[in-house]
Length: 623
Ligand SMILES: Cc1ncc(C[n+]2csc(CCOP(=O)(O)OP(=O)(O)O)c2C)c(N)n1
Ligand SMILES: [Mg+2]
Image (tube, rainbow, N blue to C red):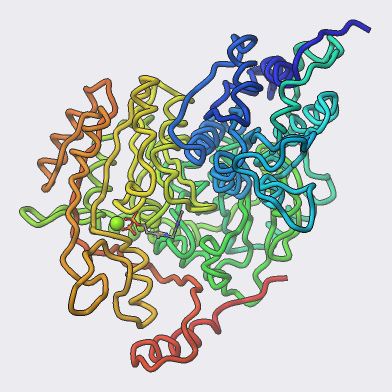
């Protein structure tokens, strides 16, 4: 057997550079490169390897390990899970900084390979700097904390173990049903150890991502159920977009007269103005979808996890006999809500259903179609109304969304993750392109926005990327602005400043409590609480100090001008937009289950509890 002698770290770098995926005959590299922040736990191992043998695996230097995982994840999402990055960190804090990123990736079913450094496999110099000593076991390190947030986890104690571990890691990363964060902990000594690796380990390897067809008999049952339905509703999740099934979905909806509502990950699957797109459903849903959901006798859930935001905490579907069909590549999701499961690829499943329904001559009746059109028109008018700018008045968050949407071109991408913006974007943004709306709403992780925006831009530099971020999220993690400048990956970042965590303050007050702990205010000497004057932050100056172009926009005309200017800049541009603190987009006949204190001396909380217990009776168990 031909062998090649190299360190374990050099072998990893060489192996990763040779992994390819192909779907529908299109081949591309699995790893676009490696992000990393070096320390004693990886600089002489993976760091040395990237320098010496990493010419085929470009290295990127971010500012924060959590952020680099978000960037990698956003890149993978933009690439429909066909390509991602590896991320290397040192031992200890560098590693645990990646934990939040790992959870974000796994929850959103997005591939990313994490290579945290680990303490010595030999244990000879222990305890080393940054080592957690566990009194009950010497076989534990902080990297064991990655186990529950990873879809595959391993630790390499001998250099030859990667021969078994890396192929398995790649199998999980490239399996659309299993994918998520994959973590391989690399003890610092083993990274530098030499081994005679079989030369074939470094041959080019292409992993075919097959499109699995749901079983014939299950499809037949689904067609039977659809033919018996008069008020069906399709819920389109992110899986529709990842499977590039958006064209097939449009064909199915049009041919059979099936309304399609959307989740955060699925928004954009159909353009907003498609006649059968009835808009967002659930807790942050709109009028049309929420009414159709309430009446639906059959819900066809495609590529969705059916999270509480989608099902309005299981209150969205009120027909006593409602049934579900779950078309999903992941059985975990396909079986939810007692669904008739169609385990398989979204595009294959949709095309099969379309062919079988066409053959059966199935189409919903005209009255249902007219009902859908009426509801859709009514919803569109409601969106226009909420977005409309009142001349002279201070801007609302809804106005800002409308103005950014108007300034963006059809192929541009809006990126967001946490705060009040995601719900408002779901309701108000009008995408025309399946990749135009990028929301991380599985983990809704503050700090994802700018790091994620960078990943989106790196994945498709031909598009303008608009990052919409609240002041709270910006303050939590904005330093990848520097990386975006370093890489020449231009972002337009709109900071919506309402002086704090206003969506949580709104939630708190809707549960009957007085405002407490959410706004950005100085501590008041007399009350001893954080209810003094507001802390004014100059976000434009902050961004400028990092090297970005920056504007402040206090009115619609200033925002339009800043967005116009931003389009022409080649450098990352930050626009600071103060908005009315209390102007909220209303809910549209929906609900989200957040528990209310069962004991309180506050009148407001007691009242909120009574109303909560009443509303909770709408919650259903589907089986
Ligand atoms: C990392 C993280 N910590 C806490 C939360 C809980 N949380 C959700 S939204 C929010 C406030 C966000 O503030 P901001 O970005 O200003 O948006 P706003 O609520 O004002 O719209 C918080 C604390 C979260 N989603 N992520
Ligand atoms: Mg805020």
